[in-house]
Length: 439
Image (cartoon, rainbow, N blue to C red; front, side):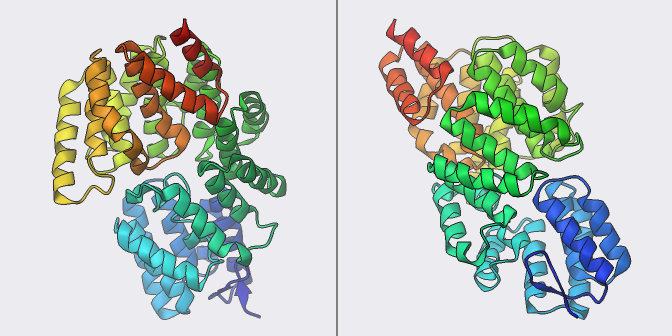
């Protein structure tokens, strides 16, 4: 009898054991749960010529920013699928090969075509979704809407109890402003599979966008202890609880969460999360008027410099600028901004001029040049979405603009921005700032 994956797509292996390990490994990968590598390795051991198992292992390496291993493994998958694989599997491996090679535009084009043909191929459909997906890092200004459109186009092909699709469909809707609708989907996804870090992550975002800070804290506090610290989203989900602490003005509590779960020396997360979570949390703490210890800044900056030495990844670039500006490394900010200018002129930075503008604005803010920060950030405020990431992550840039307006004497503009934010969601921090401006 032919074997199939978890969503009933046929897979080219004669080994029942390999098929079972593959289903387990992919579901663990799709739920950001530890053990995916062991399960996929077991699938490969049971059938060394199983192309999709090699491809999934390559995808897992890529998620963890293990580029050499990812390229090596996807090359094995290409050889294996040429010997034994159907049309869907060959397309699957080709799409992952493009993504791993960094050919993002081609990978996105091929992903969408593949999804139209085989929408239940979750590994491939997932590539454009999420805060760090191909849509988010495409430079699109409307990637929140485009994610929703993609999910809705293929929703009829997924059952109402598919925990993976509910997770990403719900997150897409919540990020696009339909917070209650998206939250209901992610809550159902978590109920269907509690061992699903992506669902808790999506639900944390929905609660943040709704201003339900107490519920978010209760969710994370009750769920996170059962998620092994080796889980790729452990530190990032904890980061969400640190944001809740900052919402209520508890910088000490936020830094305690950072020290226990988020900082590079304790986190087993993806490098992009370790760098951006650390930079944005420490920047928020300091920008809000609290002290962030120098040792934490130095550790974060040293880790980031080793993890991302070269510019060109917009979301990372702006966080690298935050770190350099906060630690007084003016030369690093200026060099990165100049390199980004060159990429913009060459047409090879999809997010465009907003990226070097944010970098220079961060330096102006750190220097206390609030008027200069406003001059740089205000014209590109609507373009910040192009850097990718989530609304909660990008909000650090809007916070910087808001505080620069407040401290630079632009009270009217600051009030207008706060009113828009408070209309979108309740926030004790924003309410306190609004009251201070009124006074």
